[in-house]
Image 1 (tube, one colour):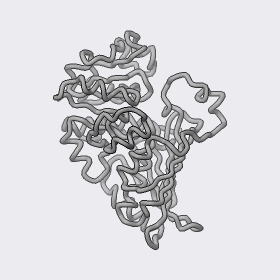
Image 2 (cartoon, rainbow, N blue to C red):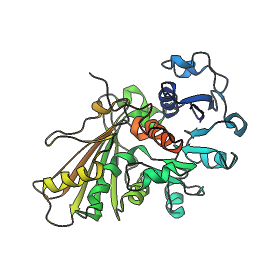
Image 3 (cartoon, rainbow, N blue to C red):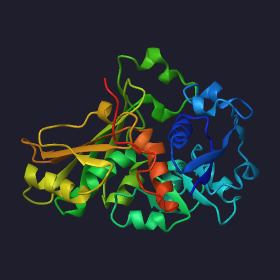
Length: 337
C-alpha cells in the first residue's frame, strides 16, 4: 500500500532532505511540497540535486494545500507549526520537525523560545524505552532536535543504568552549518566558517530542556559549536559517576540499551565516532569510557544532523505511524571518502 505525504516548509535544508528520502521510499509519495517565499518556484530551482521532482513546483503553505495527505510533515521554523497544525483536520497524522510540540513544561518552552506553548505531542525518538510503541499509536508526533538526538542517545542509558549522576552533566557538541538553516547570515558565510570553529548560544541553547526531559538529567551545561562542515554532529557528553564505574560498565550500559537497534551502533572498543561515517544516513555511532584523570564518564555520539537529527528521524517516525517497516526508505550505510 502507498501513502500520500505533504511536506510543509520543504524549501529549507531539512525539508529538502525529507523530499530526498521520500523520493526513494517504496511506500510514501509526495503529493504537495510547500514553501513561503519560494512558493510557485520549481523544486529543482531550490534543490537542484532532487531530479525526481524536476516537473514539480512548491505550493503555498496553507491548510488547503496540505489537505488530503495521509501524513503531513512540518519542517517549519519554531513557532510556526503549532498554529498551522491547529488548522488541519483532527484526523490528520502529523510529524512536526519544529520544536513547537516537544516540551512538556510550558514554562521551559516560554523561557527558551519566548512564545506561547503550543502543547505536547508524543516525543519522536523511537530508541527511548516505550517510545516506539507510543509513536506507532499516535497521530501527532514531535520529532527531536538535532543536538538532542546525539546527546540523548549518549546520555540516557547511563542515567537509566544508575551509573551517571543526573545532577552533573556537561555536553559539548559540534554541528555542521546546515543546522543553522539556509538563510543568508554573515556568520555562516564561507569566509567566516572555513578554517574556524566558534561557540554560540552558550549557556542558553534551546535543546537543553528537551535533553533533560528525555534523559532525566537534573542539570545540564551545554556548549554548541559551529564546525566548518556542511552537515554532521559530534556530541561529547560527560557525567559524574554515581559510584565506582569502569569503562566496561559504560560500554555495557550502552550495549544493553541499543542491543538489536537498527540505527544505533556501539562501536568496537577503542573506536570513536566520526561524522563522516554517518553522512547521509539515519545512523548514530556511539562510544563510551571513563576519564583516567577525573573519573568522569565520557560518551560520544556522531549523527548526520539532517539525517538522524532531522529528516531521517521524521521518516522513521512516519513509518511507525503508518504501520510500515521502521527502516523503510532509510540507510545506515554512509559514503566515503
